[in-house]
Image (cartoon, rainbow, N blue to C red):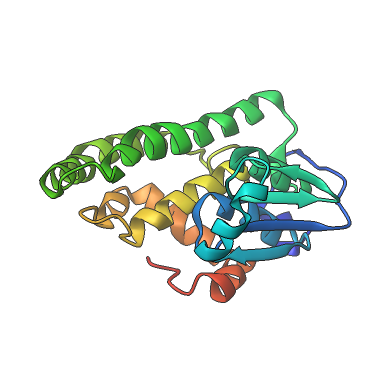
Length: 229
């Protein structure tokens, strides 16, 4: 584990035996693979970061266990679901709490990010069946009402430490950080970065994560558009 991880982790954390060979396969974007990648980078866990083009994905799709990416392989064992991948990587990196209630709080934050925000709030505005007018209207509702409400609730769950669970960084923080970066980079048409910056604690959280040396090093190498704030 890197020195920086020791500095930001201040509560009992679970760990797992490290595999001798570990790889994550996904497209050359952040997406659902990024919390896993970040966990390993922060924990100093060696892994192969495989970036796949869309043409390569089409060629391999039929051979993939679930027909989709991301995919994690650890000593021949395969994981296909991004939340399971991130939790496993967090345990390898020392970013998973031992306490059962703290684990539940991590799951709570992660489900808010993945289900309440990404799946239920954002995904309906990305349907290819929407007309341009309908999409614009949905994005306006998303930017002006839905996301501010969801992010305000998420912000209310932050611990006094400035992280989301306990006194130090956990896997929950990685999911929130990836989400806020996606929104802050204004990847979604009609959704300005102010949906994040209007929440002072969330903006401060992004800056805190950006300043972690292992995160800064990873972003410099892999995410040239970061930091955005």
